[in-house]
Length: 265
Ligand SMILES: [Zn+2]
Ligand SMILES: [Zn+2]
Image 1 (tube, protein in one colour):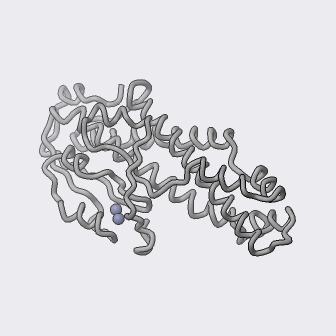
Image 2 (cartoon, protein in one colour):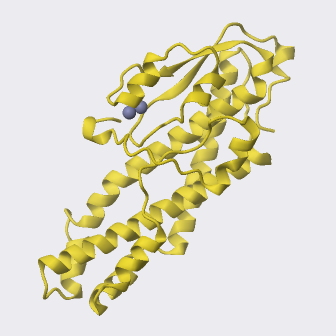
Image 3 (cartoon, rainbow, N blue to C red):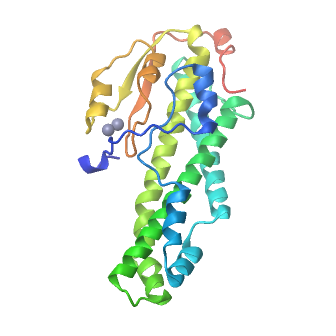
């Protein structure tokens, strides 16, 4: 959640649409993608490591996130993302008076969720390895005589070490951005696939906003359709943003109409 204006990192708005997310773009033909603040690329940390002393390079080698850890993180993000996506479909169905029971077991949605998790895990890994390199270089400037024990203590040794502080903030941010992204994707997909069966207007909630972009989105309430929201905005537009699209159907469906809903199968 937003704690202060400083957390509302709206600028620069660098649009990054990873390859794996093209299924969303293709199917909805709408403004659906992802925005992240500048993420470090692999080349960034590799270049930094190339300039390091032998000790620093060894410290980075033992401390960096490996491909195995990246895979593990991707799997966890995927499992949680799939649950959150299905929950979002269920919530939309319930609003129409229909039973839930969403199940994503195949199809482009599943591939897109997998690609998103893989991309997010790669971003997290690259960013961690880049920041680790920056911290190692900074310790070296601070303590030119530092040996590996000094590096290890400063990075991991104490309760206030760099690594602990890094993950306390990052883990929360990553989880929040990823879950908000898939929940909004679920809402967008549900209305994209089922919108012909009913009418619904939409709002962007909560009304509370800290940055200009979020204020503009909230000021636009109410929207004529869910599709309009996702045509205009990418949700969430930045980390620590709690905003999501709230669909407001005008009527309930009959049980026969409920059976026609796309629920991910
Ligand atoms: Zn904002
Ligand atoms: Zn926001």
